[in-house]
Image (cartoon, rainbow, N blue to C red; front, top):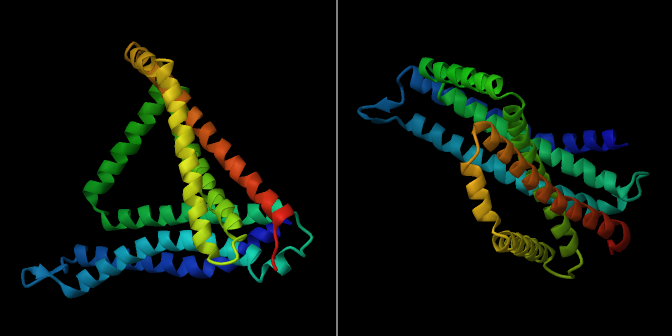
Length: 272
């Protein structure tokens, strides 16, 4: 059933994102064409078509990430807490599957938006020098992995996992905030925003307490001494361990927000 929900979510949201992605690529190609044909200047000044295309491109990039956030909020709020909620909760599917489908699709569009943005920048910067530098970068990266083996690969993979876990935690934090805001009789979105800020404050307090505890245990001084005394491989091991702790820290909050949201929707939801 999760697969069907994912299909439905993708169909409901792709009509927003695919046109944006297409326009970004078109604008990037137009800008690249202006540059390749040396048409970006006219009479010693930037040409009007070039300026307009560049402005549209920048606005589209910003709009893509703004729309990703808006769709994340809107799909959850409208489909589960709004009028569509009556239909959604009559489906023979668990509440957590409803949350999963929206969470996964939101993460999907976040990743694709990032790929499209980076890809469009590569189109703009595409020339012989750029490709030569990229080729050198990948060559150096491959040499790095070969030289330092598993630790280099571990850090690379942990960094990706950290970004994904951080994104998922941010998404379910939004879901938890919107779910709490739904209990307000008026100004639900404002209440949701206030709840989101409250969650952030709690996270900051916990982070500060953990940091203070680490300082009281002289962890910072020990870590600095330990770091300076390590060879490069040892430092990679320490970085890998630090990334692992960061992933665990984010995951704990993510799981808490996820189960809190699931509990609210399963036990406390009132669509009246």
